[in-house]
Length: 126
Length: 283
Image (cartoon, rainbow over all chains, first blue to last red; front, side, top):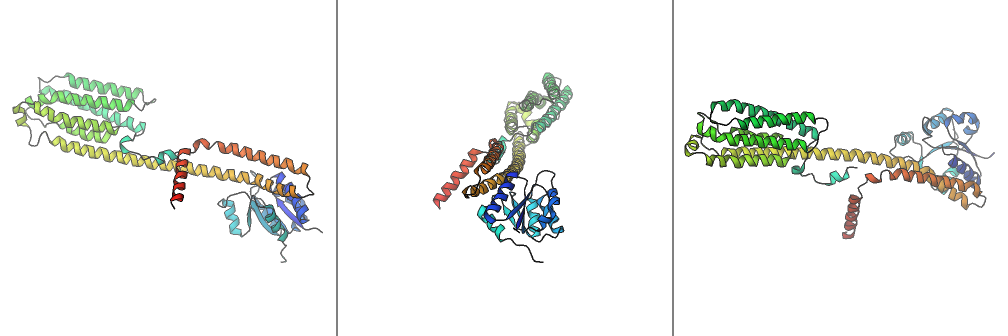
């Protein structure tokens, strides 16, 4: 079974590109979602992923990537989590994430660097 | 943004107080002139030779001024308040310059030049422009000794010791107070300009951060699309529209940014750049 990556972002173009690049370059499946509520439809697939890449701001009145992180933790997600955001470091949401100790990748990140992070990600054994 | 204001030194003698403050002060001045001229009218009853018309004229000017100030209360003009103040101050000065010789010659007991001494301090405290205050203090300072030397020797002899030069002390105190007051106003204005600059700076910084946040997703799309294009298995027809949309998003963001162009002080920015270049060159 091919390993999976979860990608949550409100840009459809970015989701499609991310799915294609992960598929072509890393031979992995990318499960793409625009919002947290879509997670509910594929819980099993999500929980089997090696990595979740979460955008933070998912649009007005939508739960944020931080909510998605808490959802994953609540469901006992064993994969790694990184945030991929265009927000400034001083943004209160980024400050909140820093407190959680989760890595934050800044958009635009070099494709090769991003692919290397994805390639190295592994599920925790505990 | 108000960068221009903070970059310019505010000179206290150029300070223009708010129109509301100036209006209030001129109302006080006209009321004071009205009261003083009416008192003068009553006082001069004791000196039958003294003409009544100067006090009546001055009181009338004050009355008309007050009506004007009330009529134009809603559409305050920045030039009207100082003009009314100047007219009232000159009327008050003229009234006393006409009356002083009569008091000096005929009054049994006269405290000399009290009105002028008071006017020096009053101008310092309420003049709506620095130069008007200075002008009025200067006029009283000049007029009092000139009046004195026109008095008869008998009238001169009746005056208290030190007259007419006591006016000099009042004029100095007046100039000092006036300058101190306007320096305070300049400082206040500078502080409020700095605060306005800070608020505008924060607003602009916030806008730039928002724009940067908005730019990052299209840039990420371009970055991934470029990597995809390099891959032989890529379907160009699928990737190119994404690139086009990312470019269109960036154009929109650029248009959004151009809204702030007018708020930027290019002249100051060029000066700063030139300064930085010169420092770099010197080092």
